[in-house]
Length: 394
Image 1 (cartoon, rainbow, N blue to C red):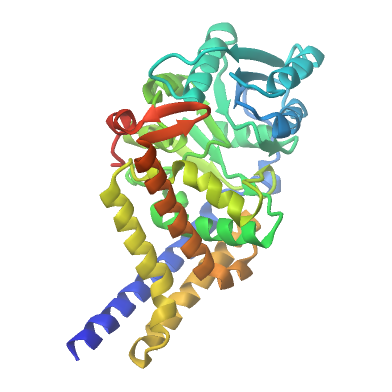
Image 2 (image 1 turned 90 degrees about the vertical axis):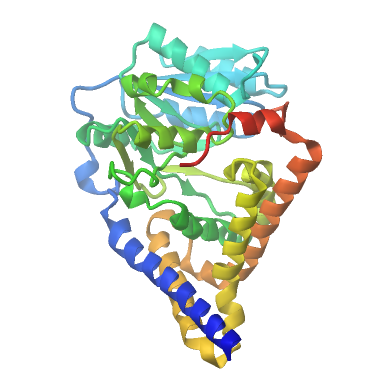
């Protein structure tokens, strides 16, 4: 009898948690500006200058399309700096060819050696930012990745909204390109579970310090705000540099703003569910600041809240709360589809996605502990050094 009460109470706790998450998302997600709306089809006030920084290491497969989409932007006061970060493939030659054809808009920086005490990506971005500020004095800096695709109006509309909202830090959510059911299953699940980590509609609330949004695909900052944050020089050993940059923005009381723009900024994560698992394996342990206790707590939460409702469907006493929990999760998938374009029907594969995500977390942790560190962009970093430099997620 006592055990039944505990099980029933737990089932209702899970159901209420998911229902509350669905209600708050239903109220909050529609308040995020959608840059596709006609009212956002405008040019930035006062025509501010912007430099786009693209760090690239062995990105020959995707880089050309990324840079060409940036070169095709319809905003004129824009320059691009592409950083060839010690690439061993054709990345450097791709940048050189495009720079030669577009000398006024695209510049190249080449990194031959990585200084001690730096991750490759943070070093490449910090180096390019210092160069841009010294040579071009841009009003804004946009940091992106080498596999991102931009529609021609993406930067103009985003920058206009950043200026209009007086944002120090502005994020336009990228849209995942889905090429297989496995990709849709995993990315749909990650999108919904991400709502437990942060509420994107609260990014603009200075009191909601924990609700910060940083996405490597589109991190736009006022140059003066970037300098106030200490730039990426202050995050030189941070694997989650985009998340920690966003967290610093909120902690320092700077203005953070976000927007959705389905298909305007897009990327293909990886090939199939297996590819996404492999990508996550590289850095999932770092999400928990390389702390085993935080990782285990997250795994327990995922087991209880993602798989628990399915297991408890079998018990008559917990069937109603389990159904309510699953309906709330399905509603979150439907709400997320509006901006992610990932079909809500992937809700049906949630148990599989949850198990694969748990597997990715455990695999990332075990491989990191076994190796005593991680290999990131071709360089090995000892675990002790990463832990020493990993700031807590306050």
